[in-house]
Length: 223
Image 1 (cartoon, rainbow, N blue to C red):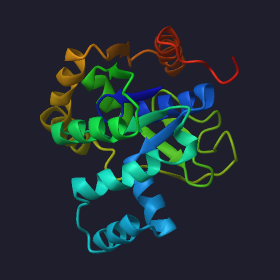
Image 2: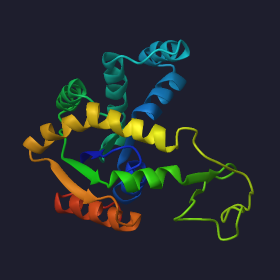
Image 3: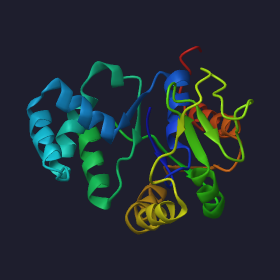
Image 4: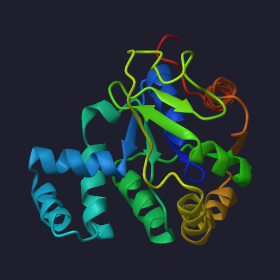
């Protein structure tokens, strides 16, 4: 099954993709990860992308499409893929349609994780991680059991993303509404969109997404 997880920055797409990888054996296709992998492997398009990235230039759509196509051709994607960060524009919607059709595949489902944006800003601004093991915490919702000490590894050093501040988050949300949100009606018109309340606890969100996919015929790897 090939799906898109849709929603604004901080809606929890990455967390939910991780659950789907575990439960259904799907592969998460993050554009950033795919780019880095192509560069590391030294493929023809990866070399071109690497030079552009070194020069601080954006990767053009046609090159990104080739890199994504190469990744889709790898055998580990046959159980299904989760598109993460792609598509973000109408031309990318068309490109994804073409990439899948060329491989005799189709998009099965788009899941929109709906969120309250004021609460979303609060959720993002308060988060921080352990610098040693990467365990995640939050000023209000998930503090360490012992103040200043990581529950997982005992480290006392933490960090926040520099763009996890209210102004930067609001700017990312504006960009999302201007550039990415307008593609959702394309998939709604095709009857592909299901909706999940992203303000529920993460485990409940995961359960609802799991149910949506099993109702559409996806089989958990343990089944």
